[in-house]
Image 1 (cartoon, rainbow, N blue to C red):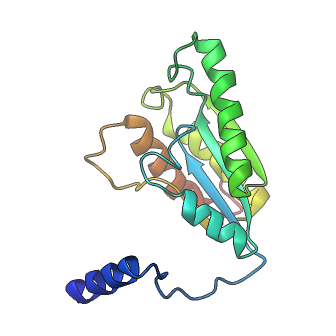
Image 2 (tube, rainbow, N blue to C red):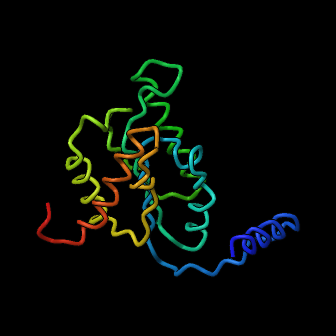
Length: 168
């Protein structure tokens, strides 16, 4: 089965055709939960998927868990501002409706209680009511970056718990 799918992918790629994908249901909401401002492009290459959701009529919301103050050549305060602007510009090009920053410190989700991050995500999920949530694999034990692991786990738990009215 895998070899047949690989062959189909290879043939479609060689001939410049798209893989046969069905239409997505219109009028829905997709939420992208990422630890850092660049995770939707660099690590997982979700930019094309996000653009496809938007092209199919989905409203897209992008949530940055950290402020990325350590990522960049400037001081921490300036890095935060530059990275937010870059996030907003990149996601605007993709058609994202809104960027939401939770402003946790970069590489610092390990020391914070998971329930604090999870509570913030529960509130956002209840507010925007996404039909689809995209993020890091919550069970990716060998992921080197603790922010990816922790945000992924908080995302999975928040999506599940947001449906219970008596939680948070």
